[in-house]
Image 1 (tube, protein in one colour):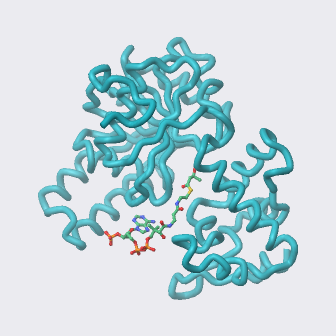
Image 2 (spheres, helix red, strand yellow; image 1 turned 90 degrees about the vertical axis):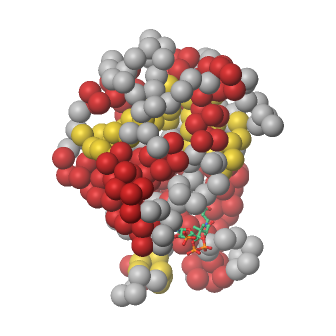
Length: 300
Ligand code: 3HC
């Protein structure tokens, strides 16, 4: 059955090579997912060798874990390790059919990245953004071919979260959208077509939820009490989730939603201080890696 809002799948173009811009945690998770599920070469790029190396090493570690858990055979593990490569140059994107960006959540940065990618790729290459909140239409605005741009919004942890938001911009054409849905299906994700509005659908809902949580803690409730309040209702305590997503992304999201929809969305002053102080969130981790409230944040 065709997912709601997906164009005819006959319009989808084959994807035989993927480019990932960025080699951070989200980008590396994406690189592994594309290689594992589509079985195609994936080239990751970042600004310097160190970042690229860290991204590729992350993929290698995850492949080793899959092998330990017997989720892949030794041959598959070796194949996956070969499929994902890294570079500081975007030249490897020349024969890619899809390039997805997962760089810093800032419109001008993403527009610049897309302009650089467009200068390298072939005419039919789809340009996807993993933005969590920014306008796909605006991101495509300055390009020669805005019709090939689409939002593909994945969720943390990418390997296990089943949902993928597919977000067409105003000018996205049917072939691009059909390719996006076909890729999502190949990645074994449940695809939903979301509208190109601030934070799309999922993060807008999550933004209300997380905003109210932060407000409760900003008003003086201890973080552990707030987190225990949803035991059994949410798959993980909300402030542990915030640590997983990253406080900078969470802050950016709430600020985008506040700009678009006003006071319905709370921008937590504590969260802002957490980001400015370079903290991981309301929690630190103890010697066994378990989350414990961070006394420095509690004192903020
Ligand atoms: N990376 C890779 N795999 C992970 C992982 C991670 N960070 N965390 C957990 N997993 C895997 C485990 O290895 C395990 O796999 P296995 O079955 O092969 O062993 C599987 O997930 C289940 O893990 P666990 O049994 O340890 O734990 P849970 O049953 O508690 O599930 C969870 C973990 C799926 C992460 C669950 O807690 C959950 O659903 N949490 C909510 C996550 C969520 O809401 N994500 C959305 C965030 S919003 C976002 O990303 C949007 C962005 O734009 C901000």
